Image (tube, rainbow, N blue to C red; front, top):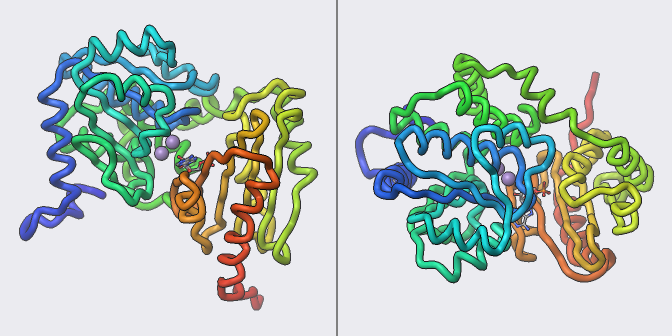
Length: 352
Ligand code: AMP
Ligand code: MN
Ligand code: MN
């Protein structure tokens, strides 16, 4: 949402009030701790780095502490400041030395993982900045939750603009990583004119898109590609070819030496098959823990299926973590997905 899109008169929209409250929150606190969701992605990490550099330029003390380690693809972002991962003692220390916590790219308390456990032992004000569809107000004293934003990075960018903060090349780079990864390199349905305008502005501030794309997308191991090959060659076509199902077993993860975040991008590939409305990936990283990822090619909403089971996401990309067997997880998800796909109007076929 751009500044220009907000009306200048009439009732003050909630979004504007929330942003203003966040800027006040940032001004009021001087020792800030930043965190994002488990298995962090380019948006979570890019938003953390951009916000940390911005806050530092305001003379604040800033620390970043996440539940999980930084995936190799994003290690280059850690050259500006340590992106620490969870360790009991370190977490206690970070909470003790901070006077406020900022949660980026999730408004779900459980998704910050073990950081949530430490949070429950410390009385510390919390601000949430996120773009996921949520049915609650967020768990912070201040919540900037804008589902229409392509990425959390876009909200950080807008906040910086409102505050009149300068976009340094390093901040522009971190924000570009956030925007590029969450829009699937400007391919997904969250790619709109705001996303492209923001990209143009970042390029004008020194971002080299080709270099950043290469930084992020050249870290795969051969094992990861073999794993993709195995999982894809067993893909199932259900509902007359309109639903694709993929499964990955703990043995497959082990055999190729992979972790949960290595499935990134896998669920998106079957979207290229003609006639597919939705893709479901059931990924059993550890026995009994099933990470479900749902994707839509644009017509069926998948976020509600996940949020009803305790997860969430966006209308066309959502996820949830389920306990039990892959068969249990399929039984919870697939009938609902099929029902939604069956309710769609038939696709118009091309006449030329
Ligand atoms: P993924 O399938 O993990 O790539 O996630 C797709 C989208 O759903 C992302 O925007 C995630 O942030 C969101 N998401 C994934 N898992 C969960 C979960 N357990 N709870 C809430 N949101 C999730
Ligand atoms: Mn994310
Ligand atoms: Mn995001």
